[in-house]
Amino acid sequence: MSLLTLSGLTARYGASQALFGVDLEVGAGEVVALMGRNGMGKTTTVKSICRMIPSEGRLAFDGRDLHALPSHRAARLGIGLVPEGRRCFADLTVAENLLAAARPGAWDMDAVTAFLPRLGERRHQRAASLSGGEQQMLAIGRALMTNPRLLILDEATEGLAPIIRQEIWSVIGRLKRETGMAILLIDKSLRELRQVSDRAVILVRGKTVWSGAMDTLTADVSERHVGV
Amino acid sequence: MIPERLLNALILAGLLAVPLWALAADEPFTITLATRVVILALAAVGLNIALGIGGLVSLGHAAFFGIGGYAMGILAHHAQTYTALDLGLFTVSGTKSMPVIWLVATLASMLAALLIGLLSLRTSGVYFIMITLAFGQMFYYFAIGWAEYGGEDGLSIYLRNSFPGLNTLVPIHFFGLCFAVLCLALFLHARLAASPFGLALNAARQVPGRAEAVGLDPKRLKLLAFVVSGAITGLAGALFADLNRFVSPTMFSWHFSGEIMVLVILGGTARVMGPVAGAALYVALEHWLGGLTDYWIIFLGAILLLIVLFARGGIVGMLSGRRQAGD
Image (cartoon, rainbow over all chains, first blue to last red; front, side, top):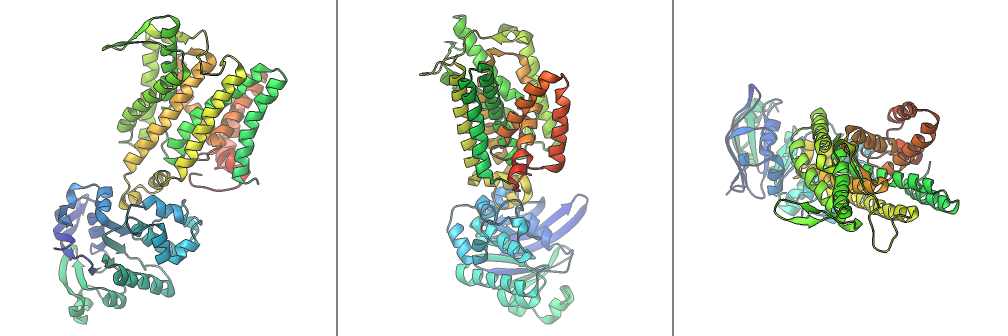
């Protein structure tokens, strides 16, 4: 049984409909890439999963209907979000950011700072004073502190220097290899997505148009729907 | 610039030194002034937990202050008139024992804070300010109409209540007692702010949506903070009533809610020692400038304006030169 199941999911912002039927599954330990051009509903899908906007259709995590839950309860079920634009708690230090999110489990302060040593070095620094890459690491560390079973990374490498991007990708790769955590990835870089993802789902205008194993995604299909 | 820890120690030491000096110089009134600083600071420490850490701009904290005051007034009134307090199902006798009064004051204000918080926290921003203000005023008018306990005239208590082992009528004894309670509240604030609860509350204040995405429930965190906050302000109300040996509806008035908010902002919002610095400055100005002119509050206004414009961290932030969350 898959961990996360979306089927025929629709969502709207006020009067304008944004999702018209998203089908998506993430199995335990699976890395799935959610792809599509800008404005096709990737982030809206993530917001629906995290219960930040109302939606309709089937939306289940570990067999439970997420629609019945408020945002913080969905997070406690084990959905960890690394949001677009990082959004750390700017006025708190690195350690405080991590502690604020802590939930019981294997990922505690020691485990997270061992996995992301940079955070240990910057422990007492305010989040606002970190570089973009460090803030991204902090956002990942903060999500890990909630001990998620599914980690969602929304544009985790956006706006970062190439060398920092490589670092983030290597962190994602290590998460996959070392923890077997299920990961839902949104990113623009097809090459890296191909390397790390097991499967891909492509959205066009708020609807799933293609899904399958990553190695069956042909250049032709990705060219047509994603533009790369 | 003074490191904040040292500054905090200096403020506390100063607050302790003034009445000790007054004791040696035989100036009991100064001890009473210092006690007033301590109690107002305690009320503001309560507000600081809601306002500073939780970002809850409550203009209704006078409600808790008044509830604490009336808890003391009612219990002591029944004790001094040897009448029973009829609670409907059963009756109890009044008491002059401070520990019992404190317990009742704290529990009653916690309960009130829970109910007010449950309703008020459905709103935010300006609406939260208005609804807390409305609750405060509701208590104010209720107290005015409560003829059984003096109505508008309030209640006088002839003798200060008692505390085991101390003679509370001796100013320095009563000061010491209040000072000890204040130190406990300050310790609680410091521990709370650094605890996972405090950090989560701080996070929820900064970016509520993000806090929810990591599994925190902002509403619950804020409600808990509001209850703790109300309890401390309520306890301060009981002490304040004992200081004056008098309770009246003015304890409930929104002026007082504004006053303790001014204390917090003057001293430094979310700073542990902010309320103490604010209360000390406030009482000092009230005493000295109030002796020179009836319009002393204008000067207080000017100082408040300068602090808000140029020193976001209040007196403590200015002197320690350290920025922190909530500035």
